[in-house]
Image (tube, rainbow, N blue to C red; front, side, top):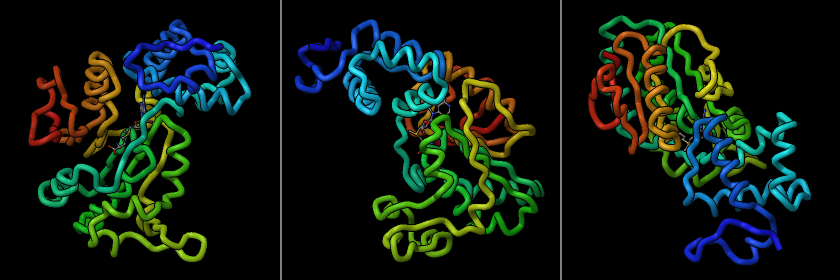
Length: 287
Ligand SMILES: C[S@@+](CC[C@H](N)C(=O)[O-])C[C@H]1O[C@@H](n2cnc3c(N)ncnc32)[C@H](O)[C@@H]1O
């Protein structure tokens, strides 16, 4: 019978626990590996989640013990990517944290117009399956910003190659549609036909403003120039404090003067308040 880290309070089902071997040492390795390679801190309470997700990979490959999988991760780049993908949390929604979109339409629109900002660059860092960049471009379109801006581009990046594929395709089901306010749904999306009945897709004319790229926020960043707005929401929550702080200081370098940073609902700039001024709920401006 396989061994797995367990305590009486673990929500792991007994039959599941015995299917594969994931020892305490294996779990420590996974914690270390994820932190080192992508900054994600998996606390001890995540053991059951990790076991469940790793089990799926072992089942797919016909392996019984994590030890064997570890050898693969260390020798095969593709498998390493699969493994990391399997442990990321990709929850997202269209128009999640709507106050950010209101801020774009009510405040930034005027600000950018007054400054004569003709070329706008936006980065959705940790875009998951794409709902965030598609919400951003919809908001820029519906508010009229797209009309007067001479050049506008959105870089949408994520570490996870699987979610990026879905983001690039940009086809979503009924459930995702429910969070899109009617005004945006009518103007920015088209309904699927035949096999894609019940699905929606962003209009091609809007999709063309978005460039999807795989970027690990912990690695070097491949882009030149600075951004008017960086949206990095619900990503840093998985990082430890020093990693969060390093990332916020790097965002600072990548923002234009007066550039804006959006964070997720439970995130803040923490110890970086010397370089970012707080404008409102999870909205910051470069000082
Ligand atoms: C919970 S989703 C947030 C999606 C979206 N920003 C939102 O707020 O709805 C977090 C995303 O961050 C990505 N992520 C985690 N660590 C990352 C890293 N080191 N570099 C780039 N993306 C990362 C994950 O793959 C995941 O898709």
